[in-house]
Image 1 (cartoon, rainbow, N blue to C red):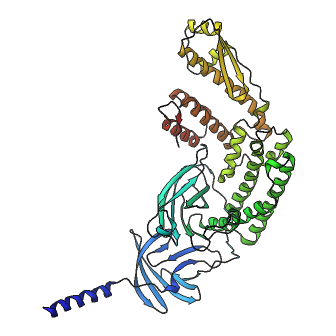
Image 2: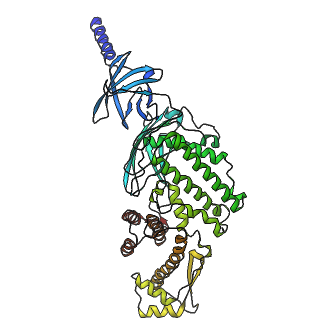
Image 3: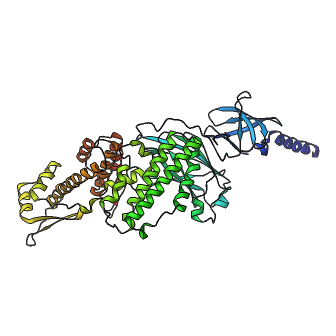
Length: 519
């Protein structure tokens, strides 16, 4: 009996040793990069392989000193990977022994990207889902204290930042999909840290975030912001994001260390002069980086737009930082140099922030709205589909006085001796009242936009109109079908209209009557 038991136990131990997963040599573990460009092509860990923007399970088919062979599967296909050590932190890797290329785990401090001469494809505004995958290297749920990350991005029209919560598995991996209307910055928040990348509709990207090389911990905020983060990228826009990560901290250094002035303690024209000086220094730095590293036309287009519009955004914010201080007309001269009509500007959210300021009454302090007559309001209300009985029209003419206070307030008063109980007539009257104010604002903004070089019919013109329509939809608690049909006629861009249409359908009103904005 003892002999049989011992024999069975020996057989079990033998079978376990036979089928135990063979380990990859430690020297071959890590992220493997193209030496010249820092392009991330392979990531080999004890548990999985990263390749072609996917996670692959693997088993060791052969492990010899001069050749490691892995059989990989991503769940839909299988591939064989051949790896040969080629020296310290270098290896030949490929899907056949004849196609292996040289890779390294050492980051090149002076990369030559060899970027494409092709810029962002037009139309820049288009719908599409983004597929984002990633891994937090060094992730330990017990040490880090979090099991989820957050994806954050600014929406093109809505002011509410979109936040997506994504679960991280025990190995630090995550995956999500989300829609975008245009190429833009997207942030990943993990614990107390943030990292930024650039994505566009229909793109797929894998990102590696190293938690061990330069963790946030107790590093002072400014020092952390001007330190290059250890990030790697694979897939669409991988080379762009590699250069993006390498260049971005240089701009932050110029901003933090380049003598940026506090708007609350600086006279408006001195602030403007200093901000434009820093902007031009950044543009010179971009030109030098392009010359030495060749990151490609998309990179140049993006950072040229980002630097200009981020500077414009900060110049426009001077007013808000100083209690809505009145800015002199010549302060805004810098806006004339912005390529507002170029739709490629959409590749940075700083552009839409500037458009928001341009279309939200930034220049409206000197706009004096005129109170309309009751007859003109009734006529405008009828043009919007409202109706009045002769008795209602007479009641409004005889008893109601309309008034406006500034560009954002309107109201009415009535004869104190007359009680008005006709809520429907008053509500219909306000439809015409709002249309009257809208027409005055539009007439005011036309020369303002013309002075800034905004061309009617261009995308920037449509974006400003769409943002204005969004405010009106929210103010009204949602548009009726007839109002949406009217908007469709005036707003020519189908993508912007479709977004507003969905937004309108998703609006919810809380039990207390307040608006729960669609997000």
